[in-house]
Structures are given as C-alpha cells and as structure tokens.
Length: 192
Image (cartoon, rainbow, N blue to C red; front, side, top):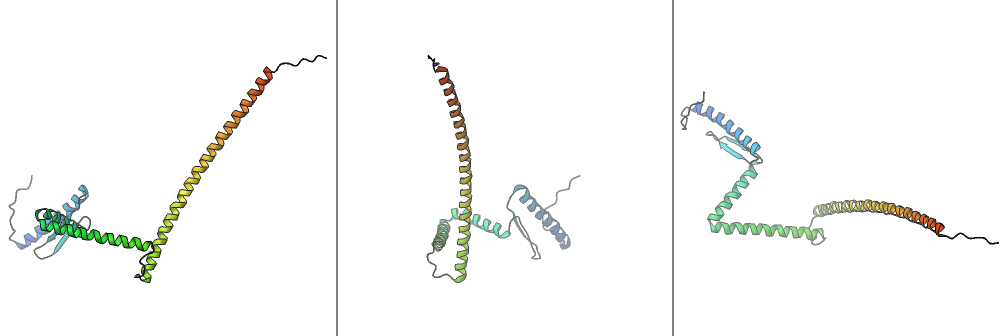
C-alpha cells in the first residue's frame, strides 16, 4: 500500500518540523551524491536550517561548483546586458594580457635575460627548472639516439644477409659458368 499525498505547507510542531527536516535533508544529500555518481554530474548542494546550521555536499569542491555557477550566471546575464558583456570581455582581455606578459617574462628568464630583479631563491628555482628541462631534453635525445642505433643495427643485419645471399648467387652463377665452359670446350686431340 502506497503513501498518501501530504499537503506541502509549514509544519507547525517544532519537534515534528525538526525530525522532518533531518530526514528530508539526509535524503536530499543522498540523492545529490547519487546524481553525481550515476550521471557524472558536478553537483553542489547548500542547505541552511532554520537554526542557521549549514549542511552542504559537493561532488568536486564547493569552491569550484560556486565558481562555475557564478561564471555561467555571468555569461547568461552578459547577453541580456550589453554593458556587462563589454566589462566581461574587458576583464577577459586584461586577464589574457597578464598571462601573455607572464609567459613572455618566463621565456626571457629561461633565455637568461632580465634576471637583475630576481632574488637568490628565485635564481635557484630558475636554475633548478633549467636543469630539470635540460635533463628531460638529454633523456629524450639519448632515447632517440638509442632508437636510431637499433634501427641502424637492424639495417646492417639486413644488408649483411642480403650480401650473403648475393655471394651465394655469385658462387652459384660462377659454378654454372664453369660447367658450361667445360661442356663447350672442344677436346684437344694429341697428334704425336
């Protein structure tokens, strides 16, 4: 037998209200977790009780869920308000300019330029980064050289086998020529 429909309205009895809140909160948190697992959805749930207690669930991190929510809300609002859209693109352009400047500065430092403002610790970090990069380059170079040497050995072995086959063919042809020469050679008659 199924449950009957209940009227959705505020529960007057505070004890009953608290019990219902506790049960339904647990169910809601459970459903949020199931939704995130079953559907690979990013879920964020925030609940404040009437006593100002906070209950939350986030499938990743609440911060990333809120940032994503804020960004999407901003994007949706941006199309409604042209001024907000201009501000959004100005912020994006400014952010990209800063990233470009940072990357250019890193590149120049990696090339050994503009090092005068760096502390000893910064220079040490840069040196460590360069050594790590150099180690990676050397490792890749050695791997490539080993592969090339292996390939050259294989080619040398194939060439050697082809050479042996050609020597066998030459020997065989030489034997055939000698036999043909013997057959075609006229017998010398000794008149004496």
